Length: 169
Image (cartoon, rainbow, N blue to C red; front, side, top):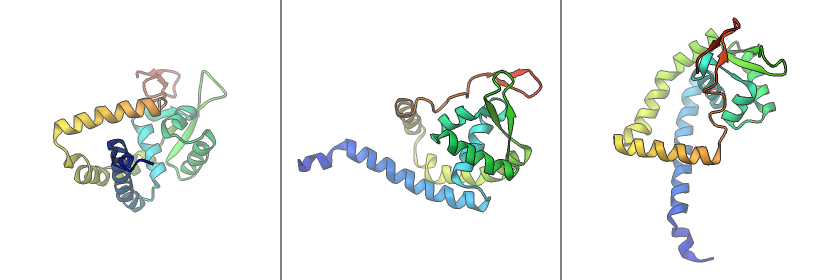
């Protein structure tokens, strides 16, 4: 192989992305553990809390997290046992159900979020000037949309509120 291929800026870009992700993930994992959450549980809670009605169809949650449908089922089962989530039947499709954050889940997320935001500010966003952060966010969205088109599945659809009405997207 051509030695210059290892100096290719594409290799450098992906390597830096992996290194940054690994470093941030380690810091996040330690902080989540302080609040008795795994990284995937935090991601599930955050994705649900950011969705209309604090809920997503299980299939949309799977698409957003890149977990399999059976993987999401196992995580939701565990989180439901812990009182962080509940399932709600879909009124328009009996084969489908929603994962919904409970008050306990929102409280756990509220307790976790200040420390999480401090880590983000200290080790990620605070390292960048505002223009550089805007450019990075734009670039990351483009890459995310290309490699993970389902990453926002269900986040802009109307969702049932539980009383038969729908919440605006």
